[in-house]
Length: 252
Image (tube, rainbow, N blue to C red; front, side, top):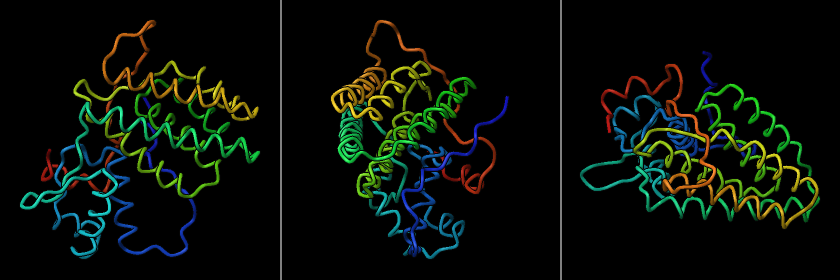
């Protein structure tokens, strides 16, 4: 079985000049999104600064940014660690994501913006589901929803969505039953893509709400009819990466 490609958070826009702190925050954010740094895992200040080749003050500032975003936790005397999501976080994470996507869909429709990115992301999601690899499906699903926000043309919504995608991934990685994704959502995602392309704002908003509500219900282990079809698998990135040398010394 082929491994899924290494997942990265989508680039929102080209940054002409990035500070060291921006780049460090992006590296750690992507490591969390990939599953290279797992929920509850300590982030060793000394070893992480050495790994990234930056000063400890720069690392501390980058970590503080991630604390503000809600993907890293920090406490005096304990240091920083990847946030472990709890059941109480589920509704809030999806409420924020739904609000972002609804506003993005409205901007696309009211501004008659192009939706080619959404079509491409839908094709990638269909291919990932055919491949039946949990991590690849999860990445393609999040990429589809990011494509909606990207097509809105709003950099601020894009920044919010990037943080929201990390929170969504952390919910999946924090689940006590292990990493799992739904693989029966192509139809509703296709209907959403078609509604946005057709300018049907009401249908698009309803479909975004339905997708969000069903995700919340599944994570809360609520009964539904029919039961969702899921694929389980590893939530961590396939293969070795630059963080592998730290995993044994930064266990949850």
